[in-house]
Image 1 (spheres, each protein chain N blue to C red):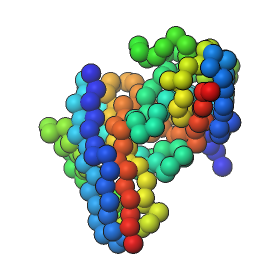
Image 2 (image 1 turned 60 degrees about the vertical axis):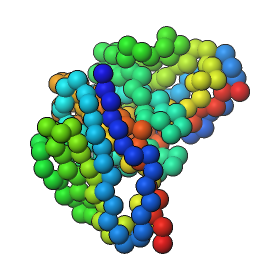
Image 3 (image 1 turned 180 degrees about the vertical axis):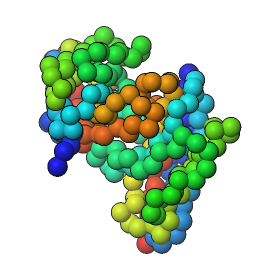
Image 4 (image 1 turned 90 degrees about the horizontal axis):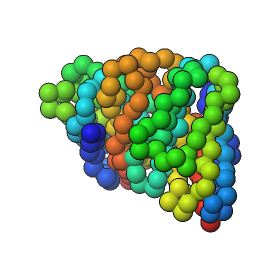
Length: 114
Length: 111
């Protein structure tokens, strides 16, 4: 089945140790997103790619970077994780920029920072 | 800015009907989405409204009033598997796919 796949499902890192989360999609969608969702909070958009065009949200910390080497893959790099970065990270895709275009989410990576 | 409000928690009985409300104040409006999210899993799409009125899809219906900045999700014939968080999300800007999410309503269905 076509889908959005995130690996790993659970990731543990140490304070200050760089970590990379990965996302792949078989939907051939143009747009890929990274959301951060802390416990009992709303998913918060960090950034998105429209093809190779990178769009950063104004309040996304510089500590968060992203790469999209091709249509299928997108990575979230956290350069120096802090305790406050522990959260669920959700990758999502959509086919085009259109009002009724829904987002397809991966199952998320739960990041713990020790 | 964006502000989306939903009740934090609700409880309902199996077989009953429950309505989950969402109010929003956003800079621009280009559609409202409802997603279901089971604990530890990805949000899954339930419904989309861009015009005023009711959209029905099986046991789930969603209503929108743009003038009131208000939507609700109606779940009928509740099943135990409907226990989940229900997220209201608004697309604010024309031409942008960004969705702004509410914090979600955690629904517990009891026997």
